[in-house]
Length: 430
Image 1 (cartoon, rainbow, N blue to C red):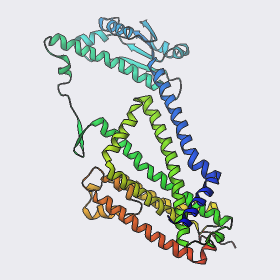
Image 2: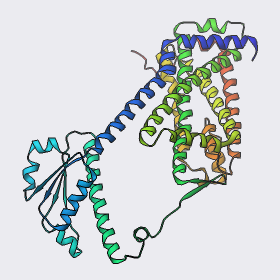
Image 3: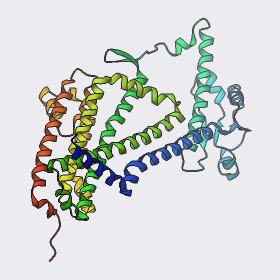
Image 4: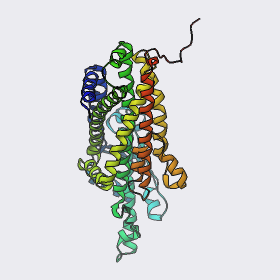
């Protein structure tokens, strides 16, 4: 990078970092919010899991038969924190009592004839009532645990009958005569089905990253130009002993650098957030392990293409943000005009995110690949397919768009109208 433009880029980066709105909202806040949110969600998940496991039950045995006694013995063997057994009581007396509802989570009613129906091979029924004490998920989770306890006992009944009928057979093989071993093949390598699902989730994060980064870069570029117009410093900037192209490129590079810092902050926050949730639900090593395997699966070539495509999109978004923001007279107008760049980018990303390239003809796939800002997603979507040439087409197309944007911006910045340009979106006052 030539000396003059290098000095200018450093100056622009320092100016952007001196702005507390950019420093706090773009670099510090994203990581801070997601880290705090992740810890809060992780704590909530852990707390719900602890509370849900401590389900307390009331059982009304209006049957007093052999199988109802087996069921009660089964519940007693589990070691529930609170288990109250009542006999020959009207369930409505319990349901209408706030004292019972406050002390217990669920009520199980075993009706008369329960044991007779099971012995006779007739479907038996029990009534389960959950006492909802709040609008959170804990009460419903405890109901699900109660349902699972009943289902486990029902399975025990089935196993008992099968053992009686087939004493020499493996009961597990009778209950599950077919066991599936499901695997997926990605780039001629075999992976488990669970890994495939985690792989899709992680790749979604890699796609989400460029979307968020581009939203940051257009906003910063617009803010930078809006500040120049608002503080009347654009004339001084354009009078510096620099080519207009160097001024544009310098601002674009500085904006891209700040955006990358914001992206790093956002990535730290996102992975901390997701890692906190996964560690609370599945274990700490799950996220890091899957992400490492995803990086290995993509390979160096795809990662290089992804980096090049993302840098091109950052520079293109930055330059377009500078151009549209040059029509504004203040920061607020500049940020509003930045949506002119951001909304089409969002449409392209969302469309490519849900479209399967293999479902289209060759011409349509090439057409989708040459869309502006498409390079990062096209690289990710073709990384594990045989259509990697589409990523090359997309990168070349976005490089051409970048060159065109540079040329247009130079023409526009060479014009003196940039100093007086205003958005033609305001209604004229009478």
